[in-house]
Image 1 (cartoon, rainbow, N blue to C red):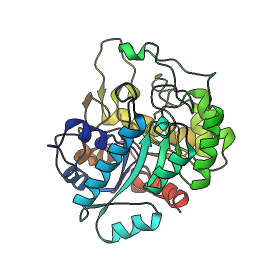
Image 2: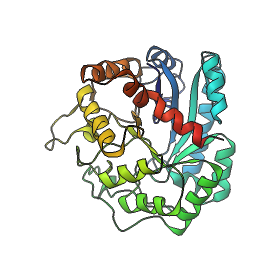
Image 3: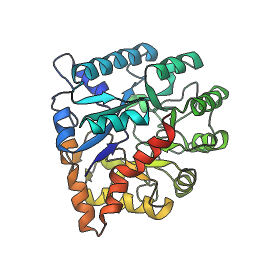
Image 4: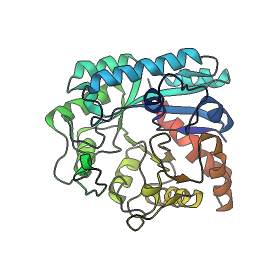
Length: 328
């Protein structure tokens, strides 16, 4: 079963780990051997910038971009970056995996439309407007005391897109750069919907009705994203899959992932559900321990009564249809 994954933080993890680690093979969730074993068609690689660790967000993102480009050059026989849908088709015909480039943290542009264009020219085709900090574009759902390690969050229903944020989403839509609302605050998501016309996505978010974490989507958000032809990538991070008592360990099980898949299907329809694992951007006990084990999810869906067509839509067909529409 082919796989399209809408989000991972592998490039950032490799760069943080140092020169001894490479995309070809490493001990993390994703490397090329694991992707090949998992039967991946495409992996979206995020240039993830934590502004709490990197004061120069633009500079660090450029460094991550260079690392991504170096990895693509070193492994060009196995994987190739795509900027257009036709390049995805070409890679598939050559039995070569595809890499789509995204940014996680819109403040890397420092409020400059010109820098947004520079990242687009470098092949970035998707961007979240925020990570976990308010920025010049918008606000995420709040994490009070985040710098002190507090993990309690609350929905932000007041602070939406700034004027600069509105300018950015309008320009992203013009460029056909995919607008990713994962991490964005509640008000911000509805602002994006109000200031755009085409499809948007939540690359790695789950259903809030099943797990009350505010990084997940409400039923209204799910329906509105789906009604616009958008997609939602199911996140494998255990605290986004299931609520637990403080201090309790939650395991990311196949069955709980399928629970969120089913809820999204029932709420938004069968065409909106995709995969956005968040591999290499999370810790925790995972039944699908890395990319090589993705077929465990297909096996679990078969046990739960899903047919081949339904599984294919979740694994890659919905995401592929979205990319075909969004990539020029």
